[in-house]
Length: 162
Image (spheres, rainbow, N blue to C red):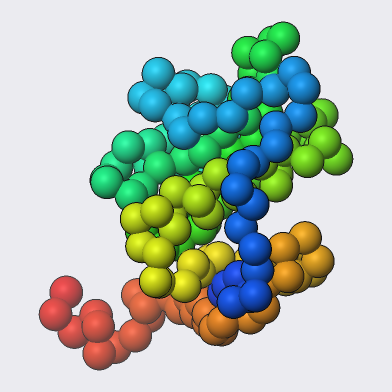
């Protein structure tokens, strides 16, 4: 059996959400539409293969989506962050665009969307990168996630009916 342990985090109650998200010059931020699905899939395929299929979150519900930052000069999607109801999930910044603050831009854009829809519900950052979210946003651990995987084909109780 394989076991993986992950941690959900949340914003500190003392955290101040910025009024406006400051976007670095030369970049534009928006919540992605279906027209942007190809750009998201391309970025995930080349740099985040475990997150292919993220475009399925674009407009999937009233409070579900993906925030993105585009390089205005090239039209490339530089960073993204997914959100759903009260959960902030998969996020990434292309290697060549890192260390420019774009991760913070998509983070706060997604958080602000979540807070508009559910202002009294704590935001959960699913299976978070502990060091990053604690340092960058003052987040703390909210819960532990255990992922267990076992090959059940050899289990006699399951294979009896075959």
